[in-house]
Length: 341
Image (cartoon, rainbow, N blue to C red):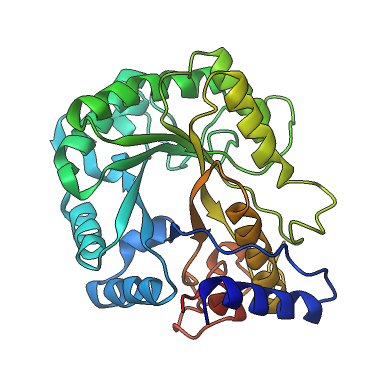
């Protein structure tokens, strides 16, 4: 069975099981990846290789890996690449292309008063730019694709939310990466699915418009989005979250970037019993719907499912239950939605 027919058959069956309309009839994206988030870096070698192997089994050719500045450059100019190299070497050994997400701020770059929260940002964007260049130089030909930060439009990852400040970091990182790797592809940060709540959170399209207003044009080779629609499929979402993908592309085109791609660096849905969790069959329908719709858009590049495997066993913790696989590697119905022929 082809990937297209498998996707449609499984997603349609899941949709029918939960009383939803059938997903749009399009194949899954050819450039499929997965992201494991920060916990991916904590896996021991055996588990890491098993998870990477399961990703190849599901048909993934890309993996999104966090390159954590806070863990790597613990003092100015003092680098420890050991764990990052371990993970990236394991991924490339299994034939993956790696998307490196540059994020995390060490205490010294926060002004010496370290915050343990991932939303802490550097006082000087040039310090981040220097790290981005050092990362590209160190990773060399093992990595040619970089995503500059994660979800800066919500305070969980960027506090306070400030598109102009984020754009300053992007403008510092972009030339530094290209100076080290002229052929690199540099993505803007994947923007979270959210709404405008004053200075608290900024909707992704609004944030992208603010980025262009702050001078982002010419400092990104592609735009990244995280168009989560759960607990709905794309076709049944009353909030129209997927519409933001087309609106973002319209913003790009209006600013001279119509020839560039949108990379979807996260999509998915959590199972379990926590807030926002959905039944496993509905997770399968949501992911099938999202992949089918992504494949219909000519301006969409690689698509990454978050995530391949549950990061824990606590069903009440939403963040632990986004996997296509359970933590013991047993498959949820969603696994077959994206599995290759």
